[in-house]
Length: 322
Image 1 (tube, one colour):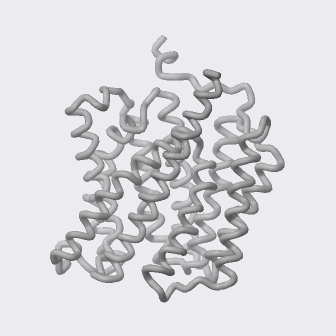
Image 2: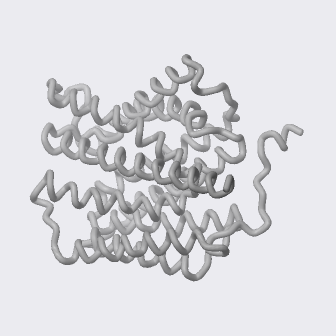
């Protein structure tokens, strides 16, 4: 009875974490889209820096009130994480600018096999045939939904390559650091958010100027744009936290596979809020295929042997000290 109760409680917390991540991620995308489409605020890297600045403020307040306990993360580990994370942000922005939308979406889909490769190589994870096939079905469905025109050039390919590998490594590293140093999501975010905020706010204005030929300090701010920026930063706190919670509780691969539900919801929300992006038979068919693949993945990966680590245990910080 106790075991069943614990399993039900874990399932409820897992579901809540996923819902929290989906709601906040879709929310911040819709708000950012409105901010850029309505007010012309196209400074994506600087806005990401503001997101992490707001997250830093939140974690600092939680530390002050004693909700987040002191923890330690070695500086070399923090530096590596920030490099991966910042290359991810910058690479994605440049990839979207230099590539067609179709190739950009293909690059995003390729993060799943790259994340699988990291788990196989570093964590000695083995996937069952059903799990592998379900991932392929998800990739097919999301591809049908989102991939239209596909054109590629050398510099766009390099930007996409950097973005895919750095994003996959950053997400793998979230899970790795939480396990190795016994860090909660709040602890890890408290270590990484200030470093990301500082580096992106320093780099962001220069990068945004190169990408848009506009300066963020010369933008015509008004009450409407400031309200949307505030909303974006507030929701992004939940997005950043829920990402760390989900990857910490699951893995980067599961986060990527099930996370494509956000892509489907963004398409649906775009139809309602921005009518020019209508749904058609191809998009609906892709959605159905993707959702079926996600359900299959959840079922296949949870079965014995669906996804298992082969006699491998990661040394913790406590073990290293001993």
